[in-house]
Image 1 (cartoon, rainbow, N blue to C red):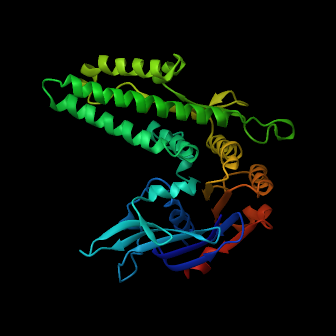
Image 2: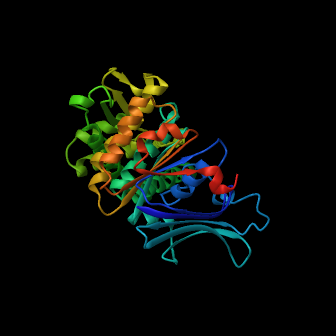
Image 3: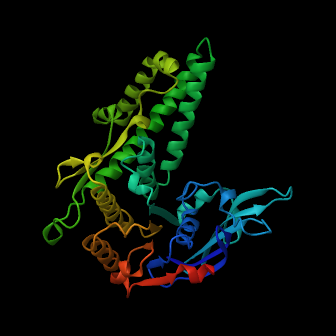
Amino acid sequence: MITKLRLYQFRNIDLLDLPITKKNIVLFGENGSGKTNILEAISLFSIGKGLRNESAYNMGNMASETKTGWSSTITLNENLKLQTNLEPQLDLSLKRTSKIQGENIRSHTHFSQWINVLWITPETDQLFLDPPAKRRKFVDRFVYAKDVLHLKRVINFESAMRQRLKLLKTQPKLNDEWLTALEQTIAEEGVALAFARHLLLEDLSKFQPRGKEQGILTPFTAKMDGPFEALLTMGSSLKIEEAFRQKLYENRARDQESGITLFGPHRSDLSVTHHMKGMNAFQCSTGEQKILLLAMIISFMEHVCFKNDQQLTVFLLDDAMAHLDEHHRFVLFHRLIANQDKNFQAWFSGTDRYLFNDLERSADFFYVPDLVGK
């Protein structure tokens, strides 16, 4: 687990050294005190730009007169130090860098060998109101934790699609050999990433509350939904790849005219069904949607993360408890406490300490204004 967090010139924080002793951490304090900033600093050890999806330059302490960059450092199990920074270069520019045990690494994506970070933020509450692309990214973040090769598939797939569209747009006389090669790559990577999403959501959907828990946690089914998913029932991966490649070939003129790739897993959407209501999440209330997200997180913890002893999974729940009733907060806290022997850590933020009373004996509590000098 994370045993120490050190921040320097990050957001509203000049310097912070935070020793950690528990699997659960509660950051509480007034709005604007810096709770989300601390969680964001941890999220930077994930794939991507972190929970705010912000540029590295904008993460610096704007109140500082030095403008020498910033750093976020976590120590795992008291001996492995991971660091990500915005550092001054010889030409006086600032560049995002990453280090393991003080040694530079090519990309912060290499942190995924030791740590995976997932989060729920107030913005995540809007997941079922957001465009489909955000829901696909939400699913992919789960898949990354289970399959580190998934990121490479997504990158290769999207790159090949961009190249194909550019070729369709700029070449009056289409280069059939080049297009065929790109379509083969799109087919191979697209089918692989679609199966990865499918299997992950299938695993999550196997979790169904029974006995005393019936009615407390929400039974659900999650799947990717779209025309492409019909291909996944055709048999072997080779047959599906060939069918997809053929569809891309047939759609060249239409894709050229529209300027987009009209068929593929990039057009699929996350579909979640609330069993007790018999409704799709899109039709549920905001509260019910949040509980469905929580149910997916709990399922992921128990059926994926808790079975992985090699990679630490860190859950960041930013202001996620205020809109849950006492019953659902208790269920989540009870499961975290009951699984203290597993390789995970949960970081919570909230304005009110009392929301986390059930974690009193199993969490480190920090009043954030005292930490950042506010």
